[in-house]
Length: 607
Image (cartoon, rainbow, N blue to C red; front, side):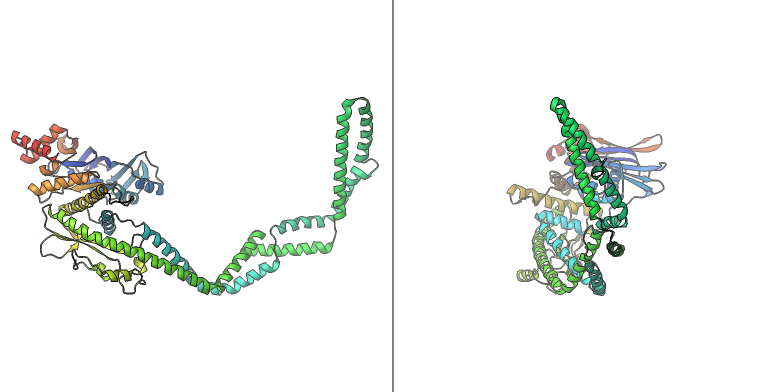
């Protein structure tokens, strides 16, 4: 929900802030007061294109900002872009300098317009008079249709992921096959060279130690035997001294028990000296001053060093390199078998995707006929006389590009039931109507096209080709009401199973939806806005009292002069002020008792 909208030095607005609430929020005021400018400001915060022309004359920069209640989807987008969350709110701010440059902040952290565009579908959908209608592209139309039907694309997305993985694995093998064949001789040589060396992990370290011993054999023998003599063999050896001292201490212990521990310690020391002496003797006797062994070790180390320079920093890395070369050779040798397995996996994945995508298309076509009929009735109740159709066709088929709207019922191209069954098993691009893999996506292979003819005798054209912003707003209102009423009815009837249908968290914004209507049609628009606002927040700019009477919260945009400059302010109206504003809209500048009574009756009737 949009909580607050603020603009500073934006167009004719010096400083204005609107505090919004749940339900239906209506903006009214005199022509030129700045109502639609506020909608444009919100569109800018949803990633719209900025221009230096929006900066108020004499100001250095224009600032627009808003506060939305956060949603799980919006928080995920923030996390993906490295932006910290701000509790349960999302704060958007955009600055446009007079030079044309600008800055974007999300939760007071620097961001980009691209981030605003990512957040927009989670926060608000703005139908401004100046918008290009690009926001209501095929993706939006598909989302609206799927929501109406309670369609889940999870099964198709899972099948699509399996198919892409299988296709990538097969393509990787096929694409690299020529390179692999050229590398076979090299891999064979590398494997043979490494395997013939019969390497052992860590053997280079062991050989280096043995080399040091052999290179210094005489010094090591002399040192070991010298220590042995001093500790054990010599007449003045440590062992002899300890033995003599132990006899004396044992004699003392016979008369004084205090020396018993000392005698044990000396005995232990003598045992330690004996063990060390034995180790030294064994080490000296084991020294082999063989020049042949030394030369053998040096040759082995030279081989290991050569292999490490070519294949890895350590013997373990060289061994791993050899194993990798052997695996590549095995893959080339087993190529036919591997290709057979991968092609079978791809075939199964393709079949699963076609089945899931075909079932999804059938659901969408059935839902499209129902939604087209409901939407046409809703649109025509808003002072329009249109024909409305929804096409669901394969994305790369000829019918996907057909803008005539010809076909059955509401301009749909629907195959016979038997053809539909065959399509699920047909290979891509085989002429059965199923599109090739290039059109396959995680949400199916359908191209969704909303088409409309706004005047009798005219052909159906894409919805986005409607010239009138007011007409587009009314069409969008009718569509949204049709979808939300269907969701509400499904919930009440219990036909909505699981969590297939989710409440849309976005704020819907309609700018001057009442262009060209009045009387009963205007009242119908008000009723539809009120109905839509039961499930989500709606912000609407209107000039008609019949619509203003339905507001849950009424905001008046007023323009006044101060110190030779025009200033705009926004007031949230209480009951009395609201009645007076509706009366002004009924009677003009002069509010009469009659218009006040009429306004009060209209507001009471809307409740």
